[in-house]
Image (cartoon, rainbow, N blue to C red; front, side, top):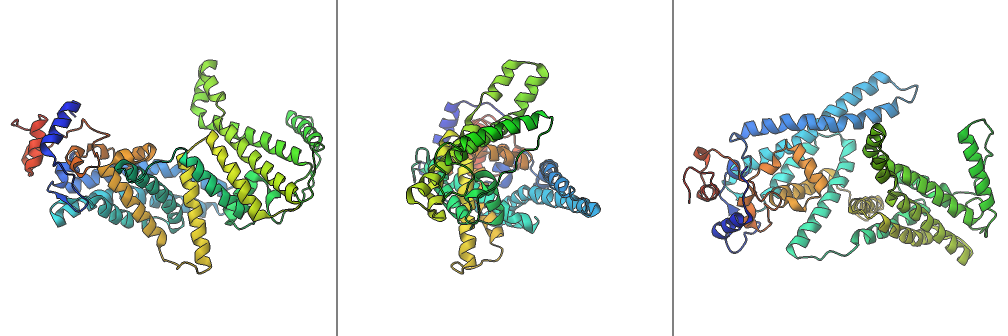
Length: 477
């Protein structure tokens, strides 16, 4: 790779690119070797290299995932260990093969597209991405297709939004991820309080918010802690005594389903979820904690232990929800689960300002869209489309693969690193300077990359000029 100056890039762009950018249905006459797999002239060998590198990466990704699932299944003493072991091995190989073939099929589709049309159009990323993703997702287990489609749909929406912002079609909203989270949380908690969420998500919210907030709950009866000579039991006893004292403070609204006073109920949630959030915060920085313990350096431990963004978010989320619910029940003298859940969820959602995350907000929105669509299909408001998860995955990955070729700077950085690993570290080797004429700033992430291609295999005059301009051709311009 040559290190090129910005002036050289700008001069080449001015000399070789048209003044008006090409559209999606315009074409460039390059071969797949000239601007695609520049690291290897043979198409078949390129596909083999990609699969050879992507499959071990996929194994490393899926082995821990399926092993954890298998360990949880083995906790059942009556479980068939041989069957679980066989199913785990097959699942690992099947999912790894699917993931590795996703990138390999994409390269195969690019070469096939060039062989059929003799050139590349601006839409070639969408077309090849859709075909390759469709062929790969049907290799995956049916039980995982739905979750995968929702995940990549989330990524595709975020990428499309960034693409539209880059083109000036839309304007970003300041703190938009906070508003998205608050609005989606309003729907989640309205459905949760009415008991209308899918069972898995309903159980998740019961663990976070509390079973007392569901429509069919009754006031729980506390079990006195058994006295044992242990530090844990001593702490639990003292904490229960503190809760008993707090439960005597403030009103005890009859329409509330929780035990004790509202003040004690709110304080218990705040303390509990601040502690859980703090534990999660430390887990996210476990490497720093382990390094500090090994090296016995307190200075390395302080940053990990002094971070409070996640615990503050957890604490504020549960506290705002409980405060709002109790106030509404006290003010109206009764409980209206769906309405009060929506209002409380909206206020609680603004706690994300303490830990803003576009990833969390987008996933919450897309998951809610899935829930609403499934409810509409169940009531025959929307038609049931067979294999919709396959079509959704293929369409979403078409957006991601298009962006990977023509505008990788608009992909979430973490997922772009994942796509690079999936391609066998080959995606950065695309000659994107040639694709800048589509107006997507394709070379923005790699402005200094010019490949070392075989001059004997270069057929396009524009590519010869570009290589000569950057000193990669036998003659100079």
